[in-house]
Length: 186
Image 1 (cartoon, rainbow, N blue to C red):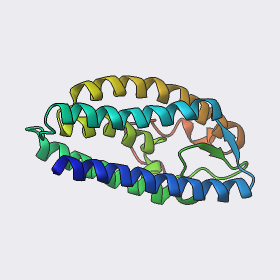
Image 2 (spheres, rainbow, N blue to C red; image 1 turned 90 degrees about the vertical axis):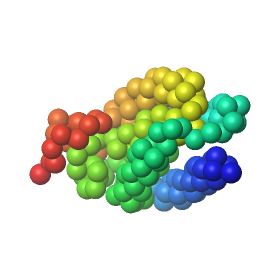
Image 3 (tube, rainbow, N blue to C red; image 1 turned 60 degrees about the vertical axis):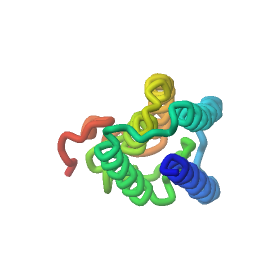
Image 4 (spheres, one colour; image 1 turned 45 degrees about the vertical axis):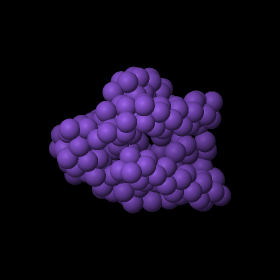
């Protein structure tokens, strides 16, 4: 029962995110935003769908038993969801699952973006580990973390080039680490 509730939570969360992304896409495109990474976006979507199927299949095949480490993992998962909400809230209409860049826009530098360039990707990386580990789906955690690393390398490079070419992003590059917060930027 716990597995099914957890899985349902994740699926509902993803559906809500896609609805927010679609709304923000309409707003940004109406404002003149340009889209980048169209060719690789479908592969990211496929990877995330396969991740959920793999997680469900492997977990159920193992009896959907919670990990002995579930108290720690669930705390980390809750903290990750807090970072997700903070990230979405901070970006507001600029948050999206696609790379949409509004020319001459000021790059968001509040919330977790005060310390990191890509807090949303930190959330994705952590989830690729935490979600499967919660129910001992170790194969899913390993395989999809590796695939995700390749996908993110491509996506982040493309996203940073797009932001650098159309916004003030270059002014912030040297001041913020990509993934691990070191110090706040003034």
